[in-house]
Image (cartoon, rainbow, N blue to C red):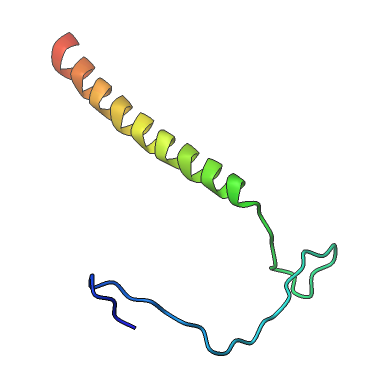
Length: 68
């Protein structure tokens, strides 16, 4: 449904619901479960390491330019 302000309103009229549970022995060997907070932590760590690497490259460029 389109609202007067241009946004949309969705109404669910039917749904098929599946229960998902974490188990000790998964049905598939490649199955893994990870807490969302851990994913965020890993993403932030990757971003930090990428920034660190770029800064180290700049610093190495400055050392080469000014100290040789």
